[in-house]
Image (cartoon, rainbow, N blue to C red; front, side):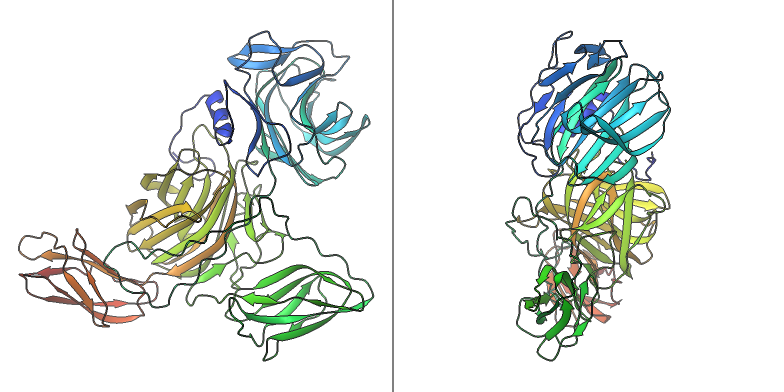
Length: 632
């Protein structure tokens, strides 16, 4: 079955209640009888601040943890237990609130069943609630309209509105996201409004109505920025040693110790008319080797400079706060954010640039915060299918690509690089939240052999059910190639790796700071065999990506067997004409990786057998597979 988002996944059969429970299981706290409630300041992004399905309360009793202001609020039964307001007098508003007045940045989601669609009635979810006269609110009103806005001292201001017919027999999913001054309203996963307003910086949640109303499955999730991404892994050697194992050599695993809640790079301030200077040096990252000919520019734009033979530059600007951008051929671009150039003074901004690995495509997302993904740090342009999924949003935030598609219940795919048939795609990923769906799994994915939209190989990391899967999507026809069981959690940085060689596909994902494991999922496919680029996919989730890389895999692979019986020969010595040697594994297989383009002679020897040889020709990103040697 292919979902409406174009992503096939394992079918998950759940009731409305079980679908809600999946939103809460990631919370690191005590969950008792269907209620979870945390007070105090917001936690890290994706942490559950509160969740309530009202199953813990007795029918007819008040809802524990909720404070009614007016109306008759009690637990009722509508298939499952719900919170119901039963006063039918439409002359007065009824309200009830929960949570903490100290909550700042969060997402509140609630299922609401209107009691009336008559003119003069309304159904309200409120965020950053101070009291009935001070809050942000999403409203279904008069049977045919929605409104999103704020009430300040009882005075209502509309920030967004539109037509929406609704009835009294349907449950509607209300959602309000508040992050700093950014406010977003959703209904049934569709974005209604995205506005900025700084009137309220904190507050609880509330539900209000002019008549009867039912409420269920309330979830409040923190939206405070997560820890920063890991540092890029060191560049591999251009000529790695051959290996007799089909698994590549492990890459280094950095162990970052990030602060718990970093601030994104500040916006630059408009310059004044006072003169100032920004100066510094540009070097190769990790060394003191100067880079001559690097280009240095600013945001806001002023002038540009080119580094001299010592890597030094000087920019004459007017005083103000700037982002300073550094670019050089063969290196990933970098920036220094919020450089304060004083009036009649000098500011220093130095930078170390990381070399682009030859033959590879990279994006360190090392550019100032911005809307959209922008140009990759290595200069490649990202393509995407935003025209297919226009309600997803993507931005650069704190040196990561931040894709948000959970609220709109949609997908987003983006790809770039160099077309190779055989390739390795790597990236670090951090799932802020993944939509709980009764039918499909959602989350972070890597793409390989991308031919264009809806034609690629996919590695899927699923925090909802602790699985890692690989798929091939051949023009909308999805086929699962393999599945593995691994524990995955939201709000954790993972390294992810997808290798594709010939018809073989292999994948893994492991926590940053831990040892790289062997392949966790493997499969075979022949549907997409043409060269393609790499990419990133976000399926109905909010995900941060960092340290993206697509690298060519240039290998000679094969199997050593007994010419008479066809049985695999383990422990055979296999050598290449370039001097590399290896040993066949228990299945008789061998792999030589990291080869330069050319033609090689492969020779195998084993005790009790005659020597056998074969030739193999490889080019960059095009391996010689199936170079089998039968020993007589």
